[in-house]
Amino acid sequence: MSEDTKTFTQADFDALKAEHSKALKELEERLKGETARKVDAAIKKTQAEAEEAAKNANLSELEKAQKAAENYRIKYEAEAEKTALTAQKEETRKLMSELGVDEKCLDFVFIPKDIEGTKARVQAFKGYVDDVKKTTFENNVQSKTPKAGNPPAEQDVFELGFDS
Image (cartoon, rainbow, N blue to C red):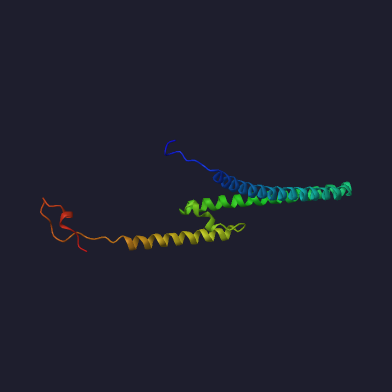
């Protein structure tokens, strides 16, 4: 045998087998728990559907129609709300682009169902960004003037240096 070959004893195999069987048992228990939770959830859902069907079976045709109309109304209102929010977001994006505010900041200024409040926030955000830009520019850009006097034609102004 070469020096690189490792030999295993029966004790090594037994230890490895015990380690893997323990891991397999843990996985099996976790799988059983997940399966049990999914089965319980499915049973509860089926029971609720059966109870709803039993209630609907006892309703008259008029009551069934009223219930269906109510369900459609609820779905319609939810869709109308989504559409309104989408339109409001688009209007906010348009305003932001007109003012030069990055669209990535939409979440910071958007107020659902309140276009006037959103517009006020966009204006305030724009003012804040402008103030930050102005302050940063004023603090970081400090120009220095060249030294006084006319340098000889063969010398470069930048070689002479700047006044601080």
